[in-house]
View 1: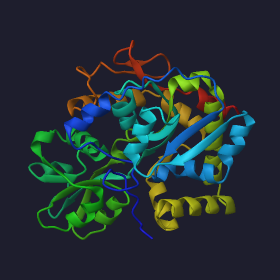
View 2: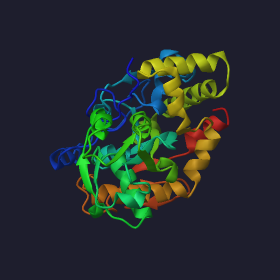
View 3: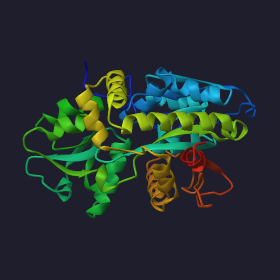
View 4: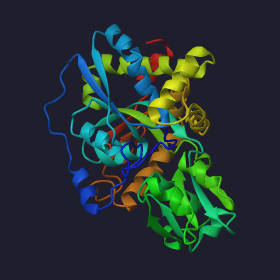
Length: 367
C-alpha cells in the first residue's frame, strides 16, 4: 500500500497541480462556460479527488449519506472521483459538474479567472502544518534560505507558502532560485547533496523532516487559514436549485459528526477513508492532525465571517496575478471576489468567486 497521497499533476491522484507553461495558463483563462443558464433540475454531479480533507466526500457517497440527504430534497446527486485533480477542476469549469472539491487558490485561478461564477458552499478545512519548508545541514532558520536553490512544485501552494514565508524574514523570491520538482520525486531528490532546501506537503513533508540533519523552518501553521480546501459549486445552479446546496451541506456535516465522535463509527469511517486514499490508518490520522477540519458548521461560518479570510484572499490574488496565473487579467482587481457582510475584493461588477455562509448557517440550524 502506498503511504503517499499525491497532490500534484505529476501523479494520477492530486489535490494540487500547477501549470507548467504560460500557454496552459492562457488556455485556462479563456475557458468561459457559455452554456445555457442553469435550469431547475433534480440531478447533480460533484467531482472529487484524493486528499485527506476531501475523503469525507467519498465516504458520504459510498455510504449513501449523500443519497439519503438528496432524497430528503427530492433530488439525486452523483459523487464522482476524477483521478487527476486538475482535470476535475477543468471539467467543472467546462460545466460537466455542478460542484468540485478545490482549494481557494485554484478556485480563483481556474473557474473564477475563466469566467465561471462560483460559490464556496463549504470551507472543509485548512492546512495547519501539512505544508512546510525544510532546510538541510547548517540551515536552521528560514533566513538561512537566502541564496539557495529551492526544490518544489513551481506555481503550486508550495510556491505560495514559500513566498509568504520569505516575506516574514525580509526576503524576496529573487533571493532564492526555484527548482521545479514533482511531488513524486521530491523525497528522493532531497537525498541529493546539491539539494539544500525543499518545500512540500504531507506525507512527503513528514518523510523529509525525518531525515537526519533536516530542519523544518516554516510551515502552514505559521499562516493558519490561508491554504483552504472547499466544496465549490456553480453559483447560478445553486441559486436556481437550493435543494442541491442543502443536500450537499447536510451530507457533509453528518459525515463530520461521524469523524469527530470517538467510537466504532468513527474508526470505521477513518479506516475506509485511509484505504480509499492509499494510506495506512495511522498515516491518515497523522495527516488529520495537521489538517484543521471544520467539524461543525458553526466553526466554518465563524471562519468565513472573520476578517482573516479577506486578508488571505488578498494575498492569494496578488500572488496569482504576480505569477501570471490569474487568467487574462490585466490588473489584480479585474476578477471580483465577494465575501459575507457585503465585503468585496476587486471588481464588484465582475464577481466570479463568492464565499457564502448561508448554507453552512442552515446546517448549523438543522437545515
